[in-house]
Image (cartoon, rainbow, N blue to C red):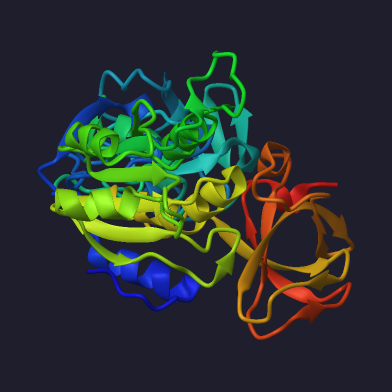
Length: 412
């Protein structure tokens, strides 16, 4: 039975994350490098060869034995040239040097490179303007990674650099944790599918597609189900098709009305709900529990409430299932562009546009914060967090801001 207390958003999020574990390590999949970005590695990435695989020059210049140029003014004959991708055909003769280019392998016998700016050509010889030390301008074999060393540990998030690293050690694919499969069940007698012309009292189901997009952006694989009616039989039939999903999102039907039947249907099916109310606006009616190994999230039906609760609770949960850290969002501090009034007992999340004033973020609430208005679900770059315990915040008050766009700090 779910607990009847109203939780703070922080407590609710902590309880959700404490109940979840990453999908089993064996539940990984092998994908091409280009498809691995943003996924968590399911196994250690271990090179089977040294990186680099040979001693290489880091400069255009001349390769030599450092012992042959211990003093400034050493004059050595130039034996041959070595280019990147074309190893020298023979070892470097003692007492000589060779022309070499960036990335080219050092010939056997050479242990240093002098940059061309410090060398003067004199016909078929090179004159070194300064003493040369062993190892100068040489990228030693295995200096980046040694064969058998762990390049990236299981659980690391694959970013573009990791893709380049994997390619550099000869991988064309990576084994990554699979994406959570997320069933999405909109509910409500009034809902008709997108593309339909709604009749009197009907609404087009917008939450289903919006949640599918949010799931995909958070790293999950959405499974969008047909809306269920506000009837026990319809809900039971819809839930029967959910088994096997890693998470279930329902939209609507978790409040306290006579037609809010989702909680009862979930419990009848065997789900154990932990809580169903959070002291916040928008999104107070929000439920969470477990149905076997399936994480269950009961989201409110108003569009803005649906997406705000997804952002705060479902997004970090899906990332946890995928083995990814945190929410993937940056939390900053900004100043309110206008005074705000709120219920003192609630944490309020304002959808805000963001601009800069000097080095500070200015948070401009959208014109409407009505959670049922579809126009209030887009066009914002941050959620301003108005804390509990305060009924009024003055213009210019500093508050936390959850940044929803990666480049929000650079907006003009």
